[in-house]
Amino acid sequence: LRLRKNKKRLAMASALAIFILAAPLVFLLLSGDKEAALPEQPNQAQAPQPPPTTPPAVLDNRFVYQSSAYLVPLQGSEGELRFLRVRYTLVTESLQIFDELQQKSIPIRDAVYHYLSKKPLPLLSGEEQAGLLRSDLINVINQQLSADKITELNFEEYLITGS
Image (cartoon, rainbow, N blue to C red; front, side):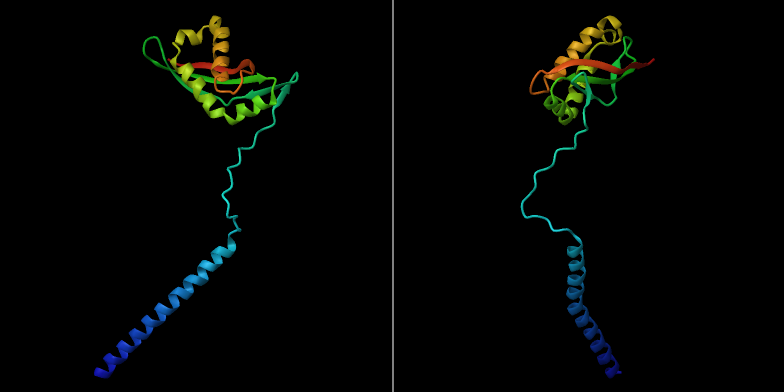
């Protein structure tokens, strides 16, 4: 009986010793494969690359930037919630300003969104207000740029929805 217990203890101690010695070896082998699969990276941190720019549409030697469509919530005259769906194009004579429009598309969109969301609904829905609205939006956008170079804004989509 005592011999069996000693054999069991010896077998367990041997298995434990093999596991302790083999585990680091298995770990090194497995981690070595992963490192070999990864491409080498330079030691220096690379500067983030700017997002790729889309080629500009050219109209009469001027560059045309198209915004994406987005919704602006509006308060109706009786407190009802309405939405303005807007998409516009901007025209500039400078390729540098076109590139800046692409790089600053989010801050420009936020500025236009903020401006439109603060306007009362009657000022946004009347056709007689369209010229004033265009010039105001050109000013809002030019404030986001390094130079006032937006010469034209055209609405591609301008739709107020809701009850």
